[in-house]
Image 1 (tube, rainbow, N blue to C red):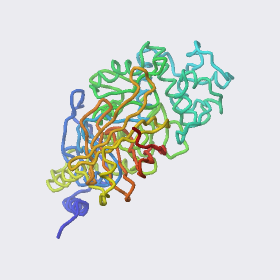
Image 2: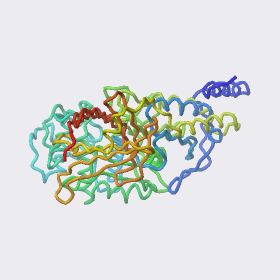
Image 3: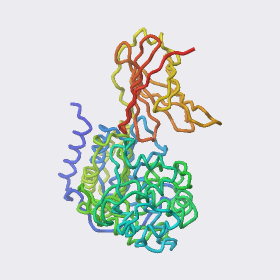
Image 4: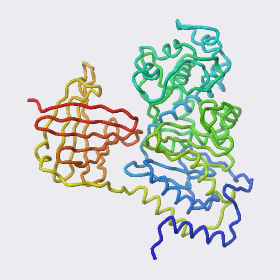
Length: 519
């Protein structure tokens, strides 16, 4: 009889309990580990059982998350990695787009400013801190906004940020020549502290405040004050704006190992190798989640929390997550490319990790359960081919042809597909609007067998693409840049010398382009 991994895992757990397993899900012995490990140079690795966790439970968790479009999952207990999975085509070592996890890092940098005295108080009025700006729509409510209000998303600044459409405030901010001033100039919708409202403008102001108080961008400040002490080296952060301000609401890239270092700093109450990087009181406020939101989650200092579950987290769109469960000595990291409605919930992840914890001290080694975990990790790294159909004669006709496009919202100039006997390929050029470099060229391989083909590393990252003919005239290509939190779909419908391209990504952006072969 052939048992599935899940069935075997259940059987293993049953045998464990028959052998005397009496710890309920999440129950611990309230004993601290003998020593605190500092992963500044590298993370140590352990079996789950050596850290009081069940390998079979973690195997099931890795399998479950594999049914979603996740990129990675890593679980750390007592300062050691007990499970680490990378879901194909994503691979280890690639910095990942953190989306709004960036906000929590900006919050951490603000905590460092407060600790080192460059920021006097979180109760300072924001308007006073930006006295060099000619701020519009000033009233008593705007004068009352404090730094703490920015950190708690309770500034009361009028803001629209949901679907990232051009008419939303967040998009208008990015189009502004002075983004920090744009945020400060918005009218008020309510009194500061009265209501929680999620806004990318608040952390953008906090990043601008780092410039004002330290004379450095948030990136340069982070390099010296946060990344270097923690041993973080994988960082990438988008170019600063015209005022030299690093984007405080998104744009930071870190590898999963370095994401976990941020979580571990919080698990250790702001301490790192004997140095207090941020104050324990800052972490306490994050844990407490003093701000009630419109969701089951709470909020404080640009971190989300589940106080009733004893957990808190940095969260980013498309399932980017740094999760801390202090009572279990656990840090977990998850990255992905999911649509907002398709992710594996943080609440479920907390429950599943908690149920895998059996003791604060080691439990007996379990070779069978450990084999299940090893198999689940290997299965995650093995890509499962998508369905493919036949190849029409049209493929030979369009192969190697360059289709050129008129002005369009995506700035695409041309698209070329090359259907070859070996690995096929694609080429896209886009206009930059820059005199010194009018065009950018992107190219990569594309698998036609349902499996992604990875291209050699380029300055913008590693492309992975696969494609199939969905009918006699339409070729659909799924493209990813590994580590970026989106999947792109390019559906090219050919008719004579013309092509219509329907583009969509997992951010919800859609566009239709019309091109043709031009001499």
